[in-house]
Image (cartoon, rainbow, N blue to C red):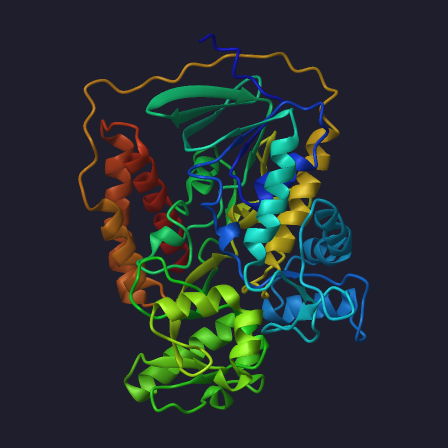
Length: 485
């Protein structure tokens, strides 16, 4: 295979909403490669339950100023004003577009788009597809992508290395056990979050921070990686990948109860169960210290089976498999890692400070979320800034780019990495930086993470999935703990 046959106009790494939407918003004359780390449905976007927050054909006195205010309040007023303005102003157009692509949002008895309420929002502005909005939005965009003859969709492909070249970028990608080089003048990183750096997360197995690590190694600015959101209501059963009990369950009236089956949020915030996620998570941890128990529950049984099974079919069916009928029983919950507000720093067109490199979705840092993401602003961020990345790249496509080749060296006589590295990193992060940081654990953990990171960077190891993900987790943990201490 010659070095020039795998040249594209743009390569997009990641196949969640951010990556897919960037691809579908680009001209159909553009040769695009979308690299999907596992199967098409293995991404955090697919797991998103709540919905897309937007002021679209406003009702009930909602407007973009209120959406802006709610976003700033949730983010502790540390949000980037320019990015927030872009987010809320362009939201309506993106809702319109994804509906035209086939997204099936729920509608009321009059056929109008239904809106729900979530924590931190002052109005009902969350557009949803029952309790599996992410899966529906991702499906619709992915179907549109797969109809485009100009887009190559490569599944089960792991980006191992990414380097800047004279002509753009070259990526070493592991496909079916073979290392293949792909080149392009423009690369878009849409690799999602970092959840697998923790023992317990709502994220999928692919969320290991690969894109953030690649950008960091190329010298891109990484901002606020320690701004991690812990979702207050993950199903509590000690599974590594925690099932999320959506924010919208509280939005529709669920109560939070402590181990004594008593409501407690009034002791911590006047907004009660509808306070922003960081407030609720911290309240649960403080309440657990008061009661000496990590037993917490959601109670929405009073809404009845007919309503709950229709409004939350995925959650309802999952809980039944766990022996819980949410129309009769309490739902055991506890905070766990959920989302990343920091990431690869970008401007309002998703451009990094490495020429030709873009980042969209959770791996990016647009600044829209401030210190804490407002519920259902995440899918919106991926749509708005994915579209802007597409526009920015499209405007440059007329510039002459000559195909170029690149060869990556593979280590000789290499060994497999030692076992247990990823597990050790997860344990360190869970102890050092979970909801309320532990400074002493963070200092000790940082020292050990530095040792692991250096070992992986200087050792002679086989470049496979285990190595790439371990190095990514070590790099992510290093950056987070360095910020914390």
